[in-house]
Amino acid sequence: MARRGHERHKLSALSWLRASVLGANDGIVSISSLILGVAAAHASHADILLSGIAALVAGAMSMAVGEYVSVHSQADSEAAALAQERAELEVDPVGERHELTDIYRRRGLSAALAREVAEQLTAHDALAAHARDELGFSSRSLARPMLAAVASAASFTAGAAVPLLVAVLANPTYVIPITVATSLACLFFLGVLSARAGGARVVRAAVRVTCWSALAMAVTAGVGTLIGTLT
Image (cartoon, rainbow, N blue to C red; front, side, top):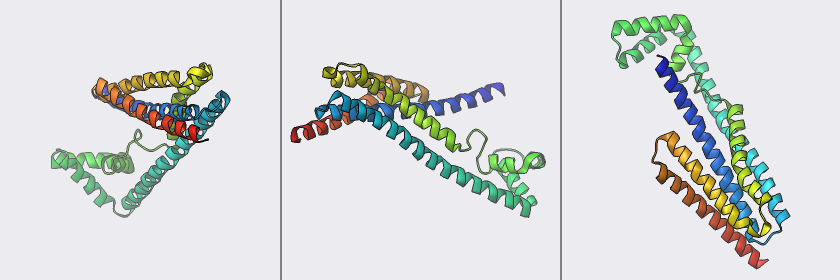
């Protein structure tokens, strides 16, 4: 039992890790691409930094709001489903207990054992039993909008801080190459981390993340160069 509890905890941690990696990846790609685009347009170093800071704040807020709205919608759906289940338990408790019995029988229990389990769980906490076994909800999986919003904004900010810090410290003449090199190195590392967390092939996943990110940076830098030549 302890081993299975440890495995559930590990899976939950891996889910959060993958979400954090994706947020950091988005932050690095977004801010590094913007810095490259602005720098390629021959903007001043001060303008590059100002653009990067503004994009970091705007991106973090956008991630937080988007995640909050999305997860809150999920929370509303979960609350509505629980309210419906609570009403059904009040109207037809016997029928709901039979429904639980059928669920346990389909999972492999004998009819007698399924009936006994359904009766005991119903007596202990009928709503919790139906939420878990009929609806698939649990305390670990229930949506937490504020926590999701904070985590999303924090991971984006952590990733975005990398190219922004590079732009602050680098010699203005070498902002573009140093930003590219540092960002791609960090993205490769994040690709490795994500692949290990998900059990995927490390090299293939890391290279895929790095190549697509490099393409995004190249396109943005190209647009910036084009605008710079026209202004």
